[in-house]
Image (cartoon, rainbow, N blue to C red; front, top):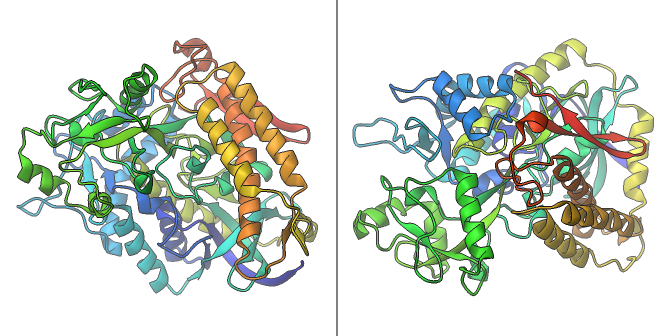
Length: 556
């Protein structure tokens, strides 16, 4: 296999979720030529599509960016970088409302104003809802990208790795154009990583199967520093039954007294959550504890129920008449009247590629935008911050990358780096198959991550996970798949699993390093919060001898 195609651009955006789309628009509107590469079909793949559609912005008359900022820091148990939090809070209103310019519609009240909800942890009503949820947001931004002549879209394009120039700056990427099977070099003056999180690592999650953390691993291999990889957010109420609905979720926030005032019940019919509702990590812990104590149902979950809401059946039906709940209804479960079996599941990665407020990473010319970038949430995330962050940091990264491309770009990819990546991919192909059972290895790895890096962790389990991750990488090193040409799904699955195994080791290493309990990181062997030693990031950095784990101070 050889590189048989090359495209040149100013800014390469890898990943076309909400942040990648916004980054592409920002760079293009600043005058840069942009290639937007996505491993699936545009606006029909990626994590954004599964988002419920909440976006935080301080638009209430009694709210402000300063109050929003304080809420983020308090909810995140002080672990977020202060400069990132301020950037998020100060830009949120402008960037959220700016989405309307691209065709996004928000739910409005009878007077035509924005409907603002107040979720746990928010000291003011601050949550807007996008009509159509994450699908509505992605569809509008994708349409705007398709209409911009400076943006070249390359979807069904699987990036395999970054390449740098001889000076060490990011200079593009190598990838497989799945539609024609060509190994392609995308040469760029600046690169923005916007590939989302790695929640598919956990067996119980509410994200799509392409959330394999590819971009995080590529940035790490290129020399970028990662922070707080142990900080996976576990959403309290992810469906675990029936099988056809596993991975969907229902809002625990809708159980609040001013919403539907329902609850999550144990197998004795007792409510598990107090009122007012606790923030996400506290709610998740209560549910996990109830399940561990044997109060769960036959499928390992607890029962989310709003059928007895004091608001009445009409109010419940109206509240749940949105795409997310109609999807559940289409599978034979009516969330307005049926008990829905739920458990905590991986929902969002708060750590990731360490960035500054303009999305710069520790590699020159490489930028990153959420969800693969962090940490601006800390150890817990407020509801609605995920999508808002895509617009704030996506726009910032797009502008910064376009400036970098204009001022510093020019040196093309180091031919030796492109050849090395080509050789790495070619070595995975053979006329036949090595017989390695990729699916079985993937299932084993995901089960181990769920068991040892889920809700409740200890040194022994994390050490076992780190060992299993290394064993999986060793087994995959000998794996070969046929050169199937176009849409070589077996090759993609092999490369994705390599990424997953590497990132599982990074999660285990960072979780081992953080010897305390904070937010969603719960160490059974270190149950107390330790501000004296751990009010700082965990750090993962690649070295010639393997990953180096340590700590990094928070930025003010």
